[in-house]
Structures are given as structure tokens and as C-alpha cells.
Image (cartoon, rainbow, N blue to C red; front, side, top):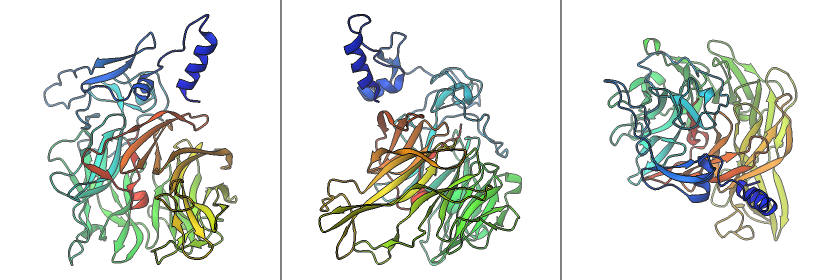
Length: 499
């Protein structure tokens, strides 16, 4: 239940003895009830549980040669010490919850409350970054980073250079992205796979691979965290198949071919095993240098699998009945995917998490299928998109919304959550509707926030970890000159900075 509703009930029940309920519990309540603070101000929930605007504290003067550890300026990353080329060593803690608030001292991210990580000099709890791909008004694509709770975006590539698909290192202090033009000439220029430290240093960037060494016309389906290597799917002409990897150690960043076929790689918690899919074969796993192993019982139509961070379960899409729908204006039919979980090591059967749906309507049916699934890192929740469409008795289907009768008032897609039993991978309870018209959901490392894209803007919704219900209003980031992209499916999913 929304805290403001609870507060109204408490006020009605307790006004004779103890007065109204608290105005706030934390700064998120203040922003939800009162909107964004004035420029240069931040919301503070006082000791008396009242919301006040106070000036953002000035950062301490940095030592010579040291990065500024204070508050971000218009979204410019300033988080932590740069890696200086040292191979990534992974996160400092397991993502536990602490009590230290934003700007308070910490020794590790486990000391900080949800949504914060321990960083800077001196170490303080600061809001995590989210990385996305946007397009400016001139049509230039940019890999972007922003604090999840602060308006403002920073491009990772310099000048007018195109960039896209940012991915975080396990420590959260480095970020990779594809940089440069794609398919703009007969030579099929692929651009570079580039890595930068966070905080950003002007002119500091390391190219790990280019189109030639990477054997690709575009770096697609890239994945880094939790591995020390970056994986991607090779694209050549109309073919997008086969997985390559590169070590992120600058002294040994050699590209190697991990598989000859397949797509959608995703790293297991060990950082060396990955799952992927091959058309007509379903899911396979492989470790670097090892032969692929088909996943028993995954089914020939399984694809887009994801590990969580704590066990051997996968989420994946599948169309076991080979059901398809053709939308008006499209020549290629769309698979009617369902969402399943599967234990990689247990040898069990897939567990249905979210099914297709259908309901009778005038002159046809209103149906839905599943897209863009992802785990909460601890494996207790899944997030996905349910796409709604109208299928007339005769003719092609049309997505709902946009004045389409008879489902013109229903969104074409909505973000849902579904609880999952971490012991056996079965769905529990009913699905929770999180946001209409949103897509590409992504859980924060602590599982307390879900980022998604809606109308070209980043939305961040706090959720109750017990029920999945929304907590307070979503944080909506202004466009700031960029329209966030969604057309490349999982490539465009928002990615949270690891804790």
C-alpha cells in the first residue's frame, strides 16, 4: 500500500492520541510527495520526519591529482577511483543492505541503503549510475550514464562520435560501449569496443577490439559483468551468429572465438560459463575454451536466457507450440513467447512463469505474449513485458493503444513482476503490474528498484521487496536532449552500475 494512503488511515485512527502519521521516512518520500527540489537544493527527511529543502553540500576540496568525490554536476559521473588499467576484480561486497544514507560515510557498499554504493575519497554512499543508449536531435546515437535519482546525462563518447550499448564491469568503476559508425560504407565499418574508467577522465579510453579483430560489422548482445571478459555476437551481412570474447586485462586483451554459432550470451555467476541459444536447438552452455553443452529439456524454441546472481536457474523465452501472429504492415510473423525458468544443474523440467493470454472481444480477441525478461539479482523476482494486441476474426493483428479499436484504451505493453521460488524456480503468487507503456525492465543490484524506458525517458520505480508493489512515484528523468532507444531489444536495456 502507498505510504501516503497508510498515513491518511493512521491520521484518522490516531489523531486523538498521537497526531497524524509521519510526513516522510526518507528523501524518496519527500520527492514523491513534493516533486523535484529547487536547483541546488536536495530533499532531506528531518529527525522530526518532516520534508525540508536544504542546499546540496559542497564537496570537500580534492587532493592534487585526485578525482572530485562530491555530488554529481548535472549527471556527470564522479564515482570512485579510476581503475588505471588494472583488470577488474569484481564487487567489494555481496550487495547487502546497510543504514548509511546518501552522503554518509561508509567502508563498503553493504553499509549503504538501497540504491547507493560506497565510493569516492573519502568514501561516502552515493546513488548508483544507470547506463542507457540515447539519440540526440541530430540523430547521433550516444551511450549515456546518469545517477538513477538525479536529472542529467553524460555521454561516454567524445564530440559527435556515435556510441551505444554501454555495459558495466563487475566493480562498477569501468564501463564498455561500442563506439563509431556502423554499416555506413561498403567496408561495413564496425567501430570499436571501447572501455572507460568511471569517473570519466578527458581523453582516457581504451580500445579492446575493432571490427577487424572482433570479426564483426557490429558489436551486438554485449555482456560484461560478472565476468572479466566481454562477450558479443558477431554480425556479418544479414547473419548475426557466433560469439566472441575479449579479456579486459589491457596486457592481454586478445579476441578469441568462443562459439561458431549462436546468439544472446549471458554470463553465469562464476563469470566463466555462459548460456546462449542456437536457432532450432534451444539453449546451450559453454565455458571459455570448452565445448558447448546442450541444456536438457530447454526445448528447441528457447532463447534469450538470463542467469541470476545466486543460483543455477535461468529465465528464458520459448514458443513450445510454435504459435505465431502477423501484425498489419509486417511480413514476418512474431512468435508468441511464454516465459519459463529452468535449473541448469538439476535436470528438471521448465517451469512456466508467465503465459500468453487471450480474452474474447468484439469481432476478435485481445491477446498478449511475453518479451524482455530479466531477473532480480537474488533470483526471487522476475520482470518482463506483456505485449497486448487485437486479433480480428479476419485479417492481421494490431497492437493495442493508439486509438485501435476495441483496445484503444489499453496500453500496447506493460511491465510486470512475478515472484519466483529460489529453491525450485516455480512462480509464486500472482503477477504484479508495475507500469503501463514501459519496456526493457532492469533490477538494481539490491533488487529494490526497477529501471525501464517509457516514452523515450528513463523511469526508476522503487518496489516493495516482499510484494513487488510500487513504492512512491516513479523517478522520471527528463530527456535532456536525448530520446532513449528501445528498438534493439535487450541491447538497449538499462544497465545498473554494480554495487
